[in-house]
Length: 243
Image (cartoon, rainbow, N blue to C red; front, side, top):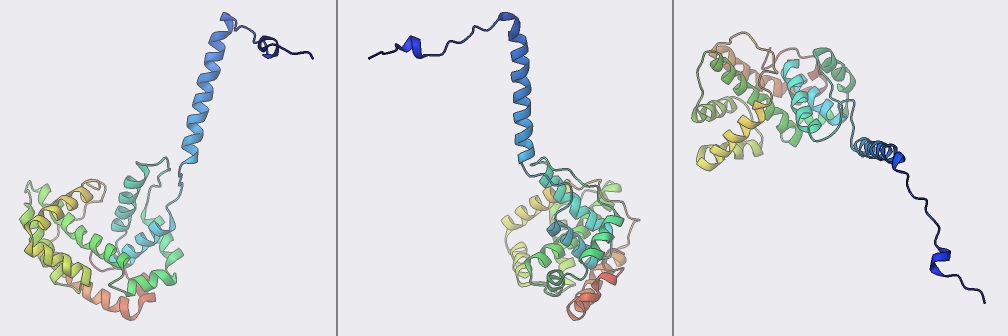
């Protein structure tokens, strides 16, 4: 019986010519680049704003009647999301926000959220808008060279919330702010972190008097009552807190 040795069975490899080495290295480099590019393409890529972000922006627009804050919400989301992915950001504008309003204004889920002050997404939108009042307050004083201490910021927040109906969850959070020093410290840190990334991205409004700022908060109650009674009519409102 004929047997082949290991050396006879193994295929013979041609020795690499030294002159071909640079070309092979170039091909390997290109291949690695293609592999890295494929990995990036395999990750989440979004060239448009997702539906859930659009609906939140629409909700903020409906509640406030001011596209600046809907735009600010989209910017905030994009800064958080696209820094961790390879998605393509979209530059939001008033026209884009109003197009989303037309698209989602009759959405059943959105109308239910608008009518329910206890809904988590409604609480999220309300909290964002109430914090935007604090943002304006800080921004106006910063232009005057006045620094707002944390204690004054919390006092202002509690006062603003006292003018309007609040959800059970928000009521508990406000109670914690009044009773716990550690909760107040943590809240201030979160607030400054959340709104620092939006600094300079929101169009400046004309200086507002304290009476006007107070009136903005008072108008929330009227808006909430109408939202609860006639949620479908919310999209036609043109003023609430930030008109």
